[in-house]
Amino acid sequence: MLPFFTDAFGNAASRTHAAGREAERACEEARAKVAALIGADESEIVFTSGATESDNLAILGSRPEHIVTIATEHPAVLESARAAGCRLTVLPVDGHGLVDPDAMARAITSKGTLVSVMAANNEVGTVQPIREVGRLCEERGAIFHTDAAQAAGKIELDVRADHVHLLSMSAHKMYGPKGVGALYVRKRGPRVKLSPLIRGGGHENGLRSGTLPVPQVVGFGRAAEIAAKERPDESKRVLALRERLRSGLFERLDLITLNGHPERRLPGNLHVSFAYVEVESLLQAMPEICVSTSAACASAVLKPSHVLKAMGVSDELAYNSVRFGIGRFNTPAEIDITLDRVVAAAKHIREQSPAWALRK
Ligand SMILES: *Cc1c(COP(=O)(O)O)cnc(C)c1O
Image (cartoon, rainbow, N blue to C red; front, side):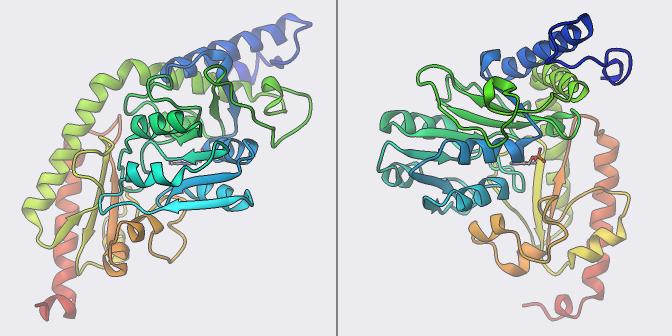
């Protein structure tokens, strides 16, 4: 990214000089790398400011008559769907956070329907059967959008095999820079028509005007390239670390529960509820362990997570839950330190708790 902040400062939309063409070339290379990660053609990638914007563009820009989505979506999808002002069906999920494809099939009643089902959940990591949902949409002539901010670079995605029409991505969820993302917009079989949310000079095929942030776009491309190359090994390594943490916690602590699906989940996601453990005290006891109580964007809000609620988790346990995110740079030693810290802190908090003494 660095040269594009200084020496290579051209505007990717300025084709009249060498500096502009160099910036354009770098952005087009990045576009091809992002496209390759999801099996798309580079002409089908629209750069945005991130997955929030991509979700807004997909949902509002497709001007649907009816939106069918699920209760555990990211607010960027749920709030866009509410703002669209059309008929809205929000389907429930099961106790593991999975959508029911039969209920989905029944909900798609007309061709002007936009279905939005996330590829993987950002809190509990549940991986949805998007290929099945995509096939349903194709049969019924509905447009299928998937928010793949969590899934891209972590699990296999192929927009053609998965029958996806629109797909949202975010660079910073795959170790790229913050403030850039993309929307895949299918060009053929069928060609998806969108209207822009941001109008102006007509950049990005008229779908997203504004000068491209060249350094961010270049960083996104490199992140996508690395993710594609590393994913087979990385997902195995991250999964092994996750399982080390999961089995350690469940061996050493009673009355804890796993949230989300036991197998159909992102390799790096572990989401656990701790009965009789006030989670704020837990986090305070181990400030060097960077974990979250819910979605990063909702941690400041004192409300039980809508995702856990939709899965039927009680308010009490929803408050007392922690999301452990394990990634590319974590080590077995860090997992062991985390285990020791969490187990010690949870036991200590329970010993101080009158409710724990009175349990049963
Ligand atoms: C992070 C995230 C978003 C928002 O992405 P930004 O790039 O921060 O706008 C949307 N959906 C899901 C599932 C996410 O995890």
